[in-house]
Length: 187
Image 1 (spheres, rainbow, N blue to C red):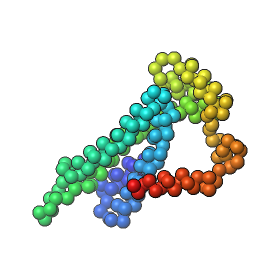
Image 2: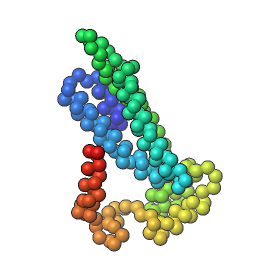
Image 3: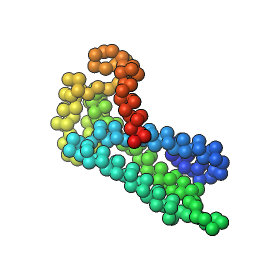
Image 4: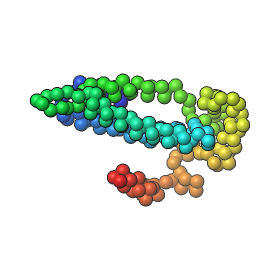
């Protein structure tokens, strides 16, 4: 929904301040999707497909950036005073239209690994049946075995966000990883 609202209002807006706020809203939506989509792909994909699906996801993002750049530079161009400009209100409507497929995620099942880690046997099998062709009993048993041996964990309100030693994690535990991640944005 943030994408739909932001792109629609971007196409209608003529205020610089509102455009900045709407770009921020789009950025938040993209940031959330950039974190959630690879995690979901990793959770639902089989071992043999995980790398290919992760690469396809990143390739799709890159191709989308190239396509929008081409559309803004060549297809949605307007002339004013002898100069060419991108017709960004119409380009924003393309973004609005391309946001609708995001609603298909509402039809996707929960991650079988997450369900198994929570001990939800029936929903784990249902999710696997929706995601896989053929028999899922062996894979479900593997997920439950990994869950019971501590190989899979799910955060629950009672468990909090503690590590395997039972100690609660703090920002200090993640400082180095956070610093590396933030620095990578600039390179």
